[in-house]
Image (cartoon, rainbow, N blue to C red; front, side):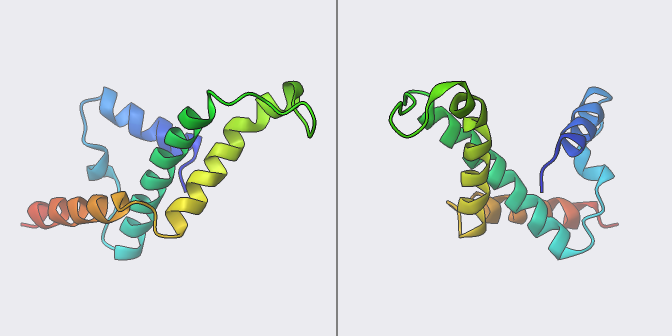
Length: 107
């Protein structure tokens, strides 16, 4: 799962000129799959939020500042659900890249 701490850790590593993948132990394939799926969930949530940005709130069944405030959270949950149910193939591509980087790092 992507959380604020992992994003901050990755950003800090990039600022120091480090490769964030060097700091992550990708020895376990499950960890790599989780990271790849989390990346896809994040990407999809950003796309969903962009798609929903042009849609106004429904005054009949909700609307108001509450709906506006929690809309981004709904987009995040849509992204997670889409990624968990197969997504659009980003996780598979990210996992292949993780494995290639891991193989290249082997002495």
